[in-house]
Length: 326
Image (cartoon, rainbow, N blue to C red):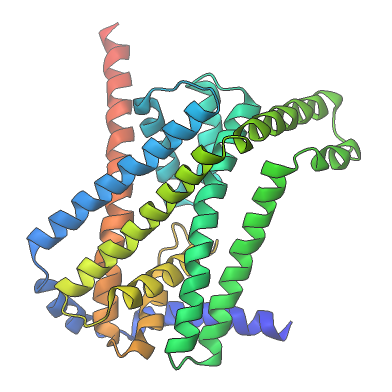
């Protein structure tokens, strides 16, 4: 109980840091960041989005499902919008993707759940691997306080539990059947759960035999996550923050790990505060850390959220126009 209280206190402290930064200094630092750098980093973010959609497309093909890339882009745009307005860990966005795979692309519920679970699991394994390396480097190389260690390991424990649940669902869906048998729910719902789990199990079993393709998808996930660190490094260089790529990468992954906790929509606040929190022991002033966090979030969160909102808004306008034209 004491550890839980300390962990929650650490998260609250991270949020409080937001109010302690000298925002007049933050704005001065932001003004010196060149527009050319910002546009280039935005381009890298668009490439990242494309790679993520290509990964979804390739996994679907490995499952024997032919889908148009534009449909997957639509699905991820809607999922991104939902993720951005709901608490993090992306559960709302993943449920939305399952729904769209069924209704828009004709997937069965089991196939849709399999695609979402497999992609999420591969991405999360790559992310947690990078975070294990990051935690090791941070604890060994930086003079950290006990509170920082608790925040890091508490967040890592949460994401590890999420990964274990996903692995249970992906690798051993049949284990859930006995649990469902004991539920006091209607027979038709039990039958639907059975159909979903049986399809999921068969699909995953077939995919596990494609070891070369799975290794390729894991490598692609590592590349996607490394691009996030590279973008943060370019921002740091543009702000004249003197840290190595490894140092920036470590802080980036630890910050994203905290930002995935389901506390605030899209991890807003916890992300910015965490980045400042972890940069302070590396000798980076709070206003510099805040400037780095704000630009990185502008590119990787607000830009993506804006694109998804504009995309959905355009689609709604087209529907209204088609309705009135008929």
